[in-house]
Image (tube, rainbow, N blue to C red):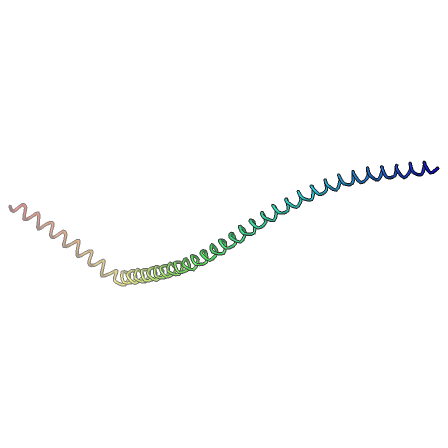
Length: 140
């Protein structure tokens, strides 16, 4: 019975040894996996630092671009105000021209009889002048 006990203990020892060997292999494999994970995370950390740097640079460029757009917008506002001034001047000029045209039209209407008389006298003078030219030609 003692032999069976020794054999049982020996069998348990061998089984424990096999268990320890497989557990050791599993732990070594786990250790390699964790090293790979650690190196991957280190690479990821480096990439994140690069991304953070690029993002900061992009943000600075975006801010500079926004400031530039703001400055140009303010300059453009000055141009728009100048164009508005020109538009107002043109509008005033048009108003003045309309008033002048209205004034001329009113003067023409008021003096229509006089204008008709001037035209009639002018035609008469032209006819007299034409007759005088013809007489002068025929006299030569």
